[in-house]
Length: 82
Image (cartoon, rainbow, N blue to C red; front, side):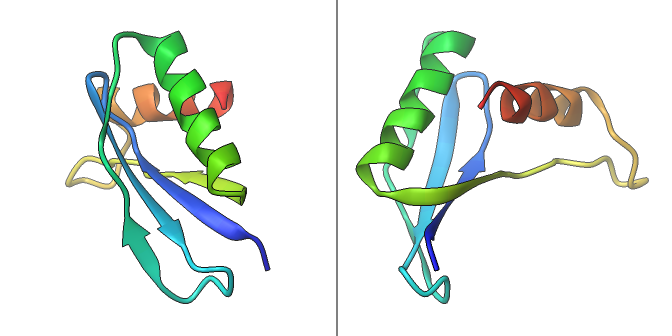
């Protein structure tokens, strides 16, 4: 099983965690400080390659109602770009 890179998208900072090779335990990585959308995509792709992640998952922050808000739409655009 390939490692999974988990992404907590933010326009200025991106939280990251990587799974072990079996996908059982996740370990937090350093937060990425980014200076724009394109730089954020490049940064996450670079970490995924460096850590040999076979899958990237991006968190989807829903509103308390369970509906998508502005933050969820932004996270979706970022996931699509990856």
